[in-house]
Length: 318
Image 1: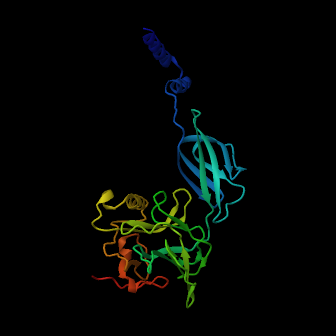
Image 2 (image 1 turned 135 degrees about the vertical axis):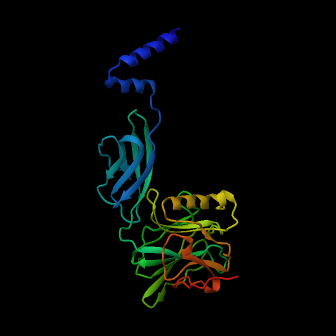
Image 3 (image 1 turned 120 degrees about the vertical axis):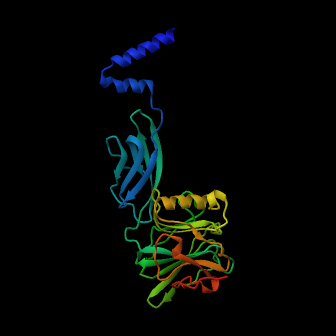
């Protein structure tokens, strides 16, 4: 009986409340207990950070490596924080943030921000050996389509969050047609910098604890990894008989494919790697074009591989 009377009273109150009190009553009856969730963040010009939430929030505290960067703000889903000084290219800092929603729920985040090189070279993935041996190890070749610095670039064997290894390129200034060859998981001694007429080839070692993922995987080139990062180029490859994970062979390959296609960094089928072996590599057709499709690449025999040099267009034929 008491419950029935209480329910009737609540109904009467709801019906008689002026409009301005309705929100208060609804809040009392259906209190929001879910903390706000961060959806994405982006660092722009190395000194402005935009953070997107799933609901309107106010920021109650914000520190960047101990420096107070809190600024009073109105409720909003996209928060903007301006730093007093820019994060230097290649420098990593951690932003500690507390967000509060209208119901008083709070969430705290530690966001790693990396300063981006604003004068980057334009790079493409031009050759990959993903079934290497002791004498012919896993390698990734990058070629500068336009010159600039490579500081801040990162090479991953999968999209962010699904990679086995992430390698940041050091500060190197490339001229047009200069090449970088990355030894992925094995390198007894790096070759010396190769001078090719007016161009140069630089050799680097990624020190990965694992090899590249066989013949079902991805090689992703990010020009920065803040937030979801920004993909500069990618190679998505699978064998035609891959059956696991919707035909992609493994979770890393599947998630990479979904994301690349969603952001239109890859179109159509993956590159078929059936013929890739320890003696055959994947190469981009020369002169280089980037259509974000499998047709950009072909398989060539190891004796025709051109790591450190412009590619050959000799296609492997069984």
